[in-house]
Each structure stands twice: as structure tokens, then as C-alpha cells.
Length: 106
Image (cartoon, rainbow, N blue to C red; front, side):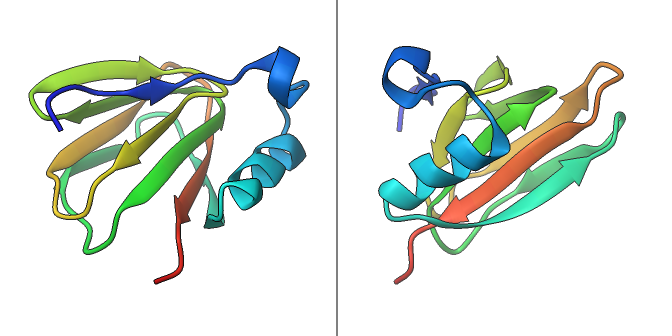
């Protein structure tokens, strides 16, 4: 992966963004997921995962870095993190982040 590819929520296709609509979208793409809420100031140092996953933001802002690039994920943004790829992240601003950590069953 040479660049960050952020998938943005499309209200025309996906309808209004909500936790339920994000769950529905992830399920339709074959993902299972876990919901998390990360408080302001939460920081995730460099890490990897044994399986590919998709990080999806419902609310708040999340700084995400991978492959020497960085982006601020906004509500409705989704990004695939390939297995074994070093990445890090942190909550930006004063609002908690509602986040879905999604993966496809093996």
C-alpha cells in the first residue's frame, strides 16, 4: 500500500450517517465489528494486527498515520488497514470518537 485510501460516506448512496447506518454498511460489505468510544487525548502508538481490518468513524475526529502518511478521519470516513501494516492514531480535539473496528471472518 503506497498511500492512504480513505473511503468517505456518501449520503446519496448510504443515507444519513448514524451508528445504525454505519453498522448496516459494514455488514453489507461482509464485516463483523466492535464498537468503541475513545475519549479526547486517547493515543494509540505504533501497532500492527494479524488480520486486515477496516476502521470506521461515526463521530469525532481521529488522526491516523500509516505508510509514512497522515490523515484526519472525519465522521463517515473508513480506512482499510492491511494485516501486518504499522500504523498509529489519536483522538483529535475535545470530542470523543465513536469508532467501529471491523474485520472479515476468516
